[in-house]
Image (cartoon, rainbow, N blue to C red; front, side):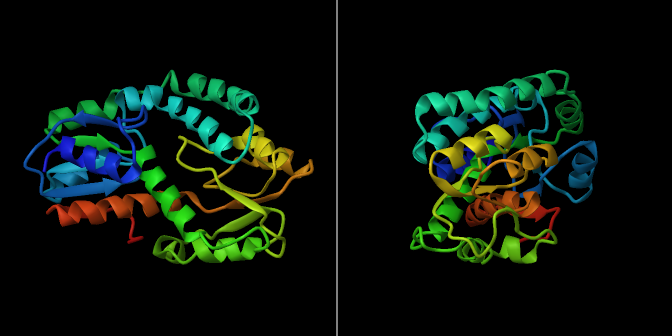
Length: 269
């Protein structure tokens, strides 16, 4: 395989028509047979890949380039997810504004060249695949929740998600950060695969528009404290690493069918 085929495989599984802003082929490569796969990739992982005889590296989080500088634009995907949950478009667009601005300011000074430059000097093909893997995982979770209705409990939702091996093996556990496992779930929204969690504003908007249970991969303490001080629904936080590997592993299964040998840095397969 080559790096283009790897990216196309991810896009196909996610249902994406084009490469999103947070994903990128940094260094092209072909005749790839063995790949190192990691959530975060820096120079150390590139050297590890070389020492292990790998032909390429797949990073989940943007490893550099435009994916690192402009990947935050994928945050706009929250608008469509909010609308799918019944939130009016104007309210959805308003909800994303504060954090979208903060993300642009956060990433503008990032060192976007260090890892791709090292990969080039090492002649190590490098690909970042972020939101496609997260979307694959989001779809898997949505499918797992089919059959639950609005009378199901939060515990029922967690039980379905917790069946995936990634969550069973992870050191971090699925946590109910707001509400209770005993409460009815009501309408459930899986707010993943939009670069990062929606924070306070997006969670509040979901709850104000009829969502009873919201799933995030992670959330900051300040956002959680603000939500806890107001009327809200149930917020479950699945855990960052297990959630990331859920989609990555599905991609790796497909790549293995195509003849690739993945070496993973986290044993959650």
